Length: 103
Ligand SMILES: [Zn+2]
Image 1 (tube, helix red, strand yellow):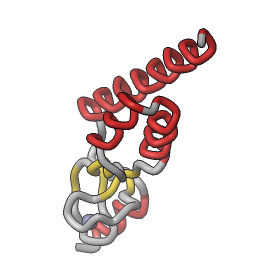
Image 2: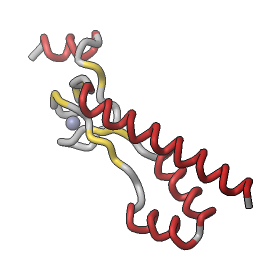
Image 3: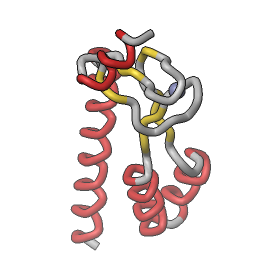
C-alpha cells in the first residue's frame, strides 16, 4: 500500500505544478493572434471531460481517477475564444505581423 501512497503523492505534486503553471500563464500570458478570425488576445484553455466525473473517480476509484486526470491534462489544448481555432500564433511572429499590416 506504501507504493500506492507514494504514487498518489507524486501525482498530486504533478497536478500542483500544472496548476501553478496555469496561474502563472494566466497572470503573465502574452496575447496571441488568431489567423482564422483575426482575434487578438489570450487563448482560452479547453479541457475535455468533466471535473465532476474526475472528482467522483478520485473519491471512489483511485486508479481510473488518475487515468482520467492524465487524459484530461494531456488532451487539453488552447484555442481562440472567438472561433475555437486551435493554432493561435504569437503577436510578434512574422506571419501575424504580415497579416496585421495587410489589413
Ligand atoms: Zn479565432
